[in-house]
Every structure is written in structure tokens, then in C-alpha cells.
Amino acid sequence: MDSYQPKPEHQFSFGLWTLGNRGRDPFGDFVRAPLPPTEMVAMLAEVGAWGVNLHDNDLVPIDATGNERDRIVREFKQACSRHGIVVPMATVSLFFHPIFRDGAFTANDPAVRAYAMQKTMRAMDLGAELGAKIFVLWGGREGVDTDACRRADDAIKRLREAVNYLCAYNLDRGYGYKFALEAKPNEPRGDIYMATTGHYLGFIPTLDHPEMVGVNPEFAHETMAGLNFMHGVAQAWEAGKLFHIDLNDQMPGRYDQDLRFGSVNLKGAFWLVKFLEDVGYEGPRHFDAHAYRTEDYEGVKDFARGCMRSYLILKEKAAHWNANQEIQSILRALGEARNGLPQVGKYSKAGASALLDYEFDKDKILERRLPYERLDQLTVDILLGGC
Ligand code: GLT
Ligand code: MN
Ligand code: MN
Image 1 (cartoon, helix red, strand yellow):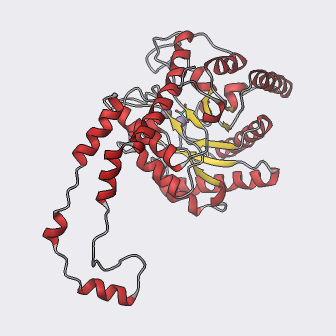
Image 2 (spheres, helix red, strand yellow):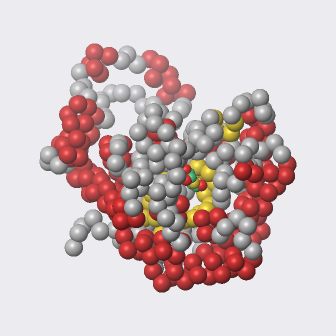
Image 3 (cartoon, rainbow, N blue to C red):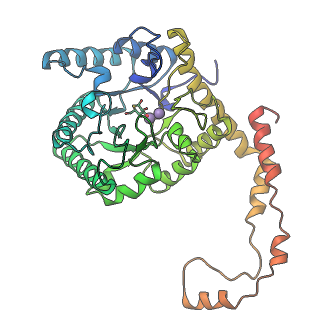
């Protein structure tokens, strides 16, 4: 039995839009035929995934009648139960239709904002019907091409009002959703509001129901912003706000690539997996990525299997790292206590005055080695299979 075989307890999920990505880009047309959502569910089961996520319109066309919608949803649910696939997360497309050319919740036209609200409420109804408990909001076009169009703080106020409204709807309907807000610095617009996970972590405490709202950090998006993804994830985790995660990969300085997880920045992926496993993150591991445009659907399966396999290999490497004696002894020595030091910790008047009076021997402190070269090489050895 392959020890990197995905299992339901790993909670690996994919979006319909990821396996269903047909390879269209701004310069070239589709290269893969459309695949019905029910077949994508079968494909997910075949490769060993646990869950499928969707935008409203990945499943139900935007202008479907009520009857069409009900039939599509019924068939999709049947496919999910037949193949043992769950729907952990739902979301809404507020970026594809031309009506959202100026954004959705932050758009200047009140009719667009109201339509965005109605569409999101219906998407929440749909997700709830499918059993989703996480609702992602990615503000794809909530941004600008020119800042002449509105004051940026007005946009933030509109966004706050919208999220507050959705939280109230969630309570009203008893859906029990947790909202996960997803940041991205740019693309499809030049500048998107809430450019990073950190921006959202600052925004959430200003909401009416902050406990209901967290973040959905994406590897590629923080990388596009030139940031250390794991650090953003760690801050979200530490704040109790890591409600979902989008795993993929990205080459800095490129367009939005959404590459197979672990295909570019292996070391970054390693620190991330190690972090998630060390802290015991229990949410879904969602791959928001797609296969190369050169692939057919066999290649899409290779892509999906690759995402999960790399995660599991990195998880095993993380366990080796944690069990490595030399690494652990270096780590222990780094923070070893020193005799006679005044306590800092919690503030007290007496403690502060002892600290102010203390004579630090800086040369002595500098004698302690920080063998980070060795520590990093041990990490590289583990990653490259050298130990
Ligand atoms: C879109 C985007 C992703 C978001 C999806 C959710 S849609 O593919 O690039 O990062 O997570 O709206
Ligand atoms: Mn994403
Ligand atoms: Mn992306």
C-alpha cells in the first residue's frame, strides 16, 4: 500500500473550478472540453480526494430557472453521495459576469451592490443545501483600475456593511456558516482592496460578528505580494482565524499561476505543511490550483494526485524534522535559560526597576552560537532525502 495514498481523514478538497479549469487564458482559448460537475465528482473520488468546493455558477448557470437549478442540485448531491465526496465549502462568483466590472460589494452602483448581495444569499442557500459549513468570500474585482473612481475608505465601509448583512442572514437562516475572507493583491484588477491576509485580520475585528468571520489565505496570493505565506497563516492561526486554506504554488514576479502544490517553492511548502501539522490545523486542505494548459484530463488527474502526494510527502518530512536529534538539540540550546537574568514577562514596578538597573554583558551574550546554517542544511538534507 502506497503510504502517500490520500485518505478521507486528510481532508483534501478541490474546487469544481480547479479540476474543471479548461485552460483558457487572456491570450488563448479553451484547450479542454467542458466536464460536467457530476463527472468531476467521480474524478475526485478516483484520485482519492475527500471534498469538492464550488461557486454557485460552477454548478448552477447564472440564469437557470428554479426547476433547472433543483434538478442540477439533486443530480449533484446524488453524485456526491454515490462517490462518497462531501462539500465542505461553498462560495459565490462575484467576478465573472460583466455586471461585476466595477466590483460587487464595493461597486459604485447601488444596483450592483444589491444584486451581489442577493446572489451571495442564494449561493449561501445552495451551499447549505449541499452541507457546506464554510463560506469563502474572495473579492475578485473589489478594487480599482484607477483610484479616481471612489475613496478607498468608502469601499471598506461598503465591504463591512455587506459582510455584516451576510452574517445576519447566516444567523437568521441558522446555517451555521463560518465565513473565510480571501485576500489577493492584484489580478484581475490592478489593485485589489484587502490585498493580504493581514489586511483582513485587521478588518475582521471591526465587524458586528467577528467570531463568525476568519480568513482563507492562499499560497499564490501572498507569494504574489512578495510575502512569506507561512507567516501569514501563522498569524491567522494564532488569532483563531484560520477557517480555510487555499494550497497551490506560484513563481514570484509571474502572473497568477495557481500551480500544483509543491511544484515551485518546495521549501516554502514544507514550512507550511510543517506548521499546519505541528499546530494541529483541523480544517480542509483545499487545493486551489489547476493543471498546466498543455494537459488533457489524464493530466488533470496527475495534477490532482500530485497536489495530495506532495502534501503527504512533506508531512512525513516534517515528522522526520521533528524527530531529528541534532535539530532538536540545536533548537533547545538556542533559548536556554541564563543564570541571574531579571525576569521580563508580565509588567510590575519592581520588575521594571530591576530590569533598568541590570548590567548586561553583551559580549557574553554574543558568545552563544546561532548555528542557523547547520539548521537550514539539516532541513535541506531532509527535503532532499540526504538523512
Ligand atoms: C478564483 C480565485 C481563487 C478563489 C476562488 C474562490 S475563485 O479561482 O483565483 O483564488 O479562491 O472564489
Ligand atoms: Mn483561492
Ligand atoms: Mn489564485
